[in-house]
Length: 341
Image (cartoon, one colour):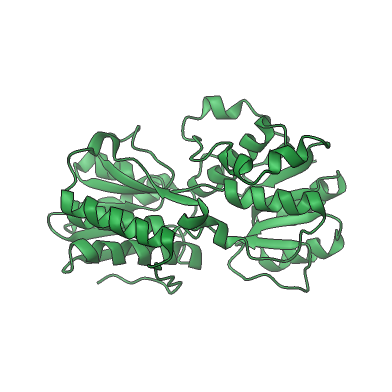
């Protein structure tokens, strides 16, 4: 049976701080609906440790829903792609009503499992759009390009050389779109900027990410886009700046991480739970719940860099954020693999 992990982990792993907490569930009215019934049984299946940026957002949202009494929650981490279908089956057969996770490396195999458990709702991170052939599979991705774009504006203003290094995991749409949005933001502040782009071929290999970042610094980069863990460590050691992704790590790198694009999975999970509760869960794209106007992403507070970012950049960020929220500006979504310039 898949390993059951329990709640206390949040207090032991400081990286798992929620950007939205219970707010997403309260704002939908979901809490009121579900308090009158048994908590929804939710299982999470993750291919990496729950500290990893992307997965940590799902885990934190689930823990918040559990704390609110809306769900029961169990999960497995470090599940290999080859073992993923088996763990899906075990959770489905154990009675999980909603299974969340990420199937980027096991797309077809996971869909075969989904068909075998039509009474179970699956909400899985995927590079593909929903397919009505799999009516109980909702897909999502962290479409936080709005926040990435705003972080790029700050990055461009803070880079003196305009030589910016970008280290990613794999060149899949989820990563590519954030990198492109960041690069577009940089160009707003520093049109002449150039980029070094590299992918390490892993979702969790901090030493490799760090070495890749070191090479970029040696090649002139004075600011790094830390899409993976390990990049900010290199920046800190070499005295250059970094921009974070998905979570806020400034507390760990107070003189290094200027800003971060934050993802809050709360709105996505709240929408799925509401549909499970009323029996309307179906093959849908939940990606839009990560947009800034839905409360799914935000720019982290400047914190230790308060007063250090040029005012012109801050004014532009404020104007663009307001335009994003009122719909008068749309951040371009570009899923093509970014290249060095």
